[in-house]
Image 1 (cartoon, rainbow over the protein chains, first blue to last red):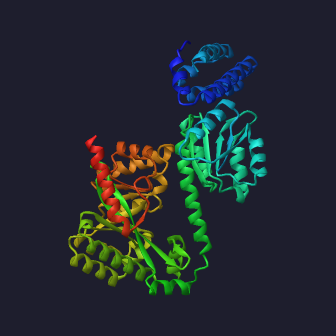
Image 2: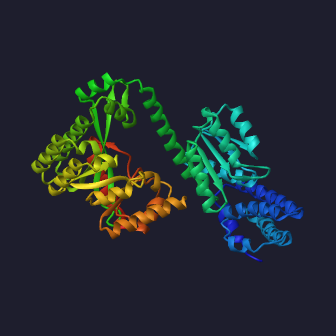
Image 3: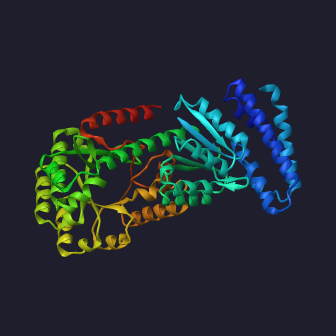
Length: 97
Length: 400
């Protein structure tokens, strides 16, 4: 599941001043790391759904519309893959902030 | 302004704070944060409930927002904290939480899907705080006695306020509902305080007569107002007063250019009385419209439909105000509008406070809109200015 969110990120950050952009960027990165760590230790569907819910909240804030695809994530591996992909794009955009 | 954000995700807390900083609706504020329900409850207690806005996530690690909601509901001194629930949960869950919070009598700003629009929440919270302040003032005046109310009525301490009704298709003003206030040296006394006292003193019919007389006098004094329907509330008890019905009909005959609608509320038992039905027939024959007020609120709603000849249904505000988040209310409003269409009567929706609700009502085919989105009830002296301002706005909007 690959999705280009660079425009979503630009659109999200552009509303804030530089100082605020950097602190939001760091908070976003920390949140994604936290989700990745939690996904690695998922042991049940309930735990998977809880982590997915957190990820969904972030996606909503970034206006990433993939609720449908999210429903297709049925394993921690799939979730890790998607979160990792988003994480890389967040890291990559830092120079633009 | 003190704002407490309870959310287990630091990014979302930061995003909300960033939006607060850029908002033009709040200049001076302090934020407090908690990452779960327990921390949130501790924070509420620590700042002794001095919170102007509580933004609460529903689903959090190790806890959920319902714990905070329950805490607020069992501690009366915290129940008035303006509460905005935020979540990524599905609409049905949001609707359920909204119903629960309202049934617990919390000061609910709303239940919002993430991402939240901070400006909207701030505007709503401010509006609720003002309402609460008014309610507190009313409570302080609850000492108005039976004797006082009789004297206030005799001294004509009555003020008429008017709330506009707007045609949803043409966007033009269709009319105004009259809403009465009484006053004494301490300020306004609102209907929830004075109506029970009037009822106890047996002055209901006298009061209605006075309201109708004042409303007609005002409507006749300004030519421009004759373009708009004048809607006045009457109770079933008023209908069995033959002298009042005679009086209304005589006023209408004397001012035939005034379009009058009577909004009928209350008990089915009295309405079924032959004299009440006879009054309704007389009013209709004299070109006075009948609106069924608070439609859907009473168990006798459908019996009223069967008994009374009417030309308008007014859907109760409790169903309208949250149709954008409450699926059941959406269904009820949708069905009522469909029923009204089949019966060829017009539908008024009251309690419209947001564009979102207005858009849904427009899609459902509602005819007339009323609510704070257009204007709160205003004193008569402001009516012409409001009409001019609304019409100019409309002209500008059409020009663009």
